[in-house]
Figure 1: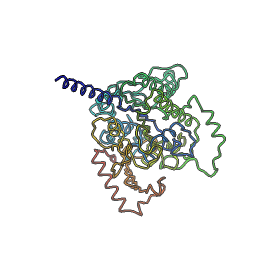
Figure 2: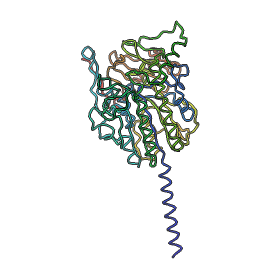
Figure 3: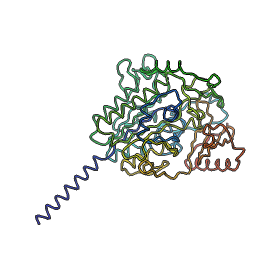
Length: 480
């Protein structure tokens, strides 16, 4: 009898130790979202570019770099909602930046559909799922998913909210806020000393949480406001990039802009202030990675970095801050420059670190992927769980990707939608009811519309696009 008692006691102790060990081994997650960071803004993607991103390049060497990663939408709020829920923006009724604005509305030939100006509290967020799974949840930076405070991060599953409120960019208001420099005019972020830089400050807040809260597993969602406008040179390296611009040689015959519908697309990266902002973001990502290592957390932490849309390269006039390399157009457009974004993932047990993959992935994949690696229960909605690919190289089955932007945008975009199936890419314009067809394998810059050469494929893809849009509850523009 006594032996039986000791055996049961030993079994209980072993079980308790195993449970404790499992808790200890739950991985941490640092998800970094950079606002408006273009695919070609990262040196590893575009080596001939003007910008320098040594920390992101190092992260690519230690993890996986996705060369064909996509934002869920060409502008910010819809993609942010998709990241937070794993759902296509159509299902959430958020297909424009919140609250959206078109100064030419009265002269437009078509009426665009209204949007929801918040991420509904009824939706299950990434943070809520992590919390249910025993995680601490921290949000730092840009939110832009609700005009009213009741829709902000602290009411959407985050234990901590530092800096997240209704606006989508640092504010410039005389006597009240100074953009990327304190005072910030942000009700969720106390002002710092004179000269404090917002990107540094958000990183400082993140580092403090990592140091103080690392005894239990955590999700840190660091959402930089950079490199969104206003373009204000960062405190360091602006002079360096001014010199770099002055001393480099650009062929005289190389055009600086290209006509893009009613807009102009910038073709050369040469904005020193923007370059300094990219460098500051990169430096601060490096600080996060260094701190994880200093705290002994790097071997048990997944770090994911991506952007909410393509780089801002296209506007009604000349003056966009960046260029997207070989990709066409930029933020606001369904061409590749507006939706293809950087994505880097590093973490424990990742297969084939240091490699680049052309596997097409999209914002909605983040939701099931992170929850799967956290050991949480989840429903795979519009995204694919990439964890089998990250850990074992097993690619998910995916037939197509599609985008829907039925509003006008200040980049000169007109309402349209797009679909990618294999290497085929179709863009549909609602004003003209015309389609453009491209083969991304042979024409990644989408320079040759081949719809007239492949009319059957064009009709087929338009049909699939409309089918997917209707399936996800898309709203369409109507003629006046």
